[in-house]
Amino acid sequence: MKVAPLSGTFMIASMIGFFISTLIVYPRWPSMGFAFIILFAVMFIASMISMTYGPVEAELALDKRAYAKYKNVKPSAERKPAVKRVRKRKKKK
Image (cartoon, rainbow, N blue to C red; front, side, top):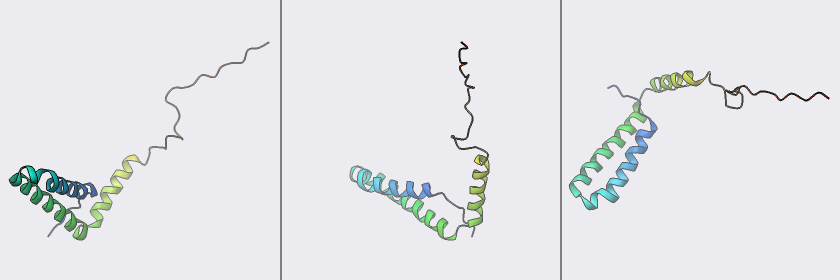
């Protein structure tokens, strides 16, 4: 069985969706709320399976690729300003 690595935001979205479905949607529309509760519960279970059995190498490869994209960017304090500032000359007396 192959397990794909899922992001942490996927798990957070499933938890938030579950609570919103339980507290807001289910009291107003029971059939629609029940469907959303099932959907977000399945999403949460999928994220737990991914967290437990997912390949760490694939997730690390994704992190390294994202890091390589931005590693050449210097912190903002070290960057040169985009507009060259002109120094004011002192008046000669």
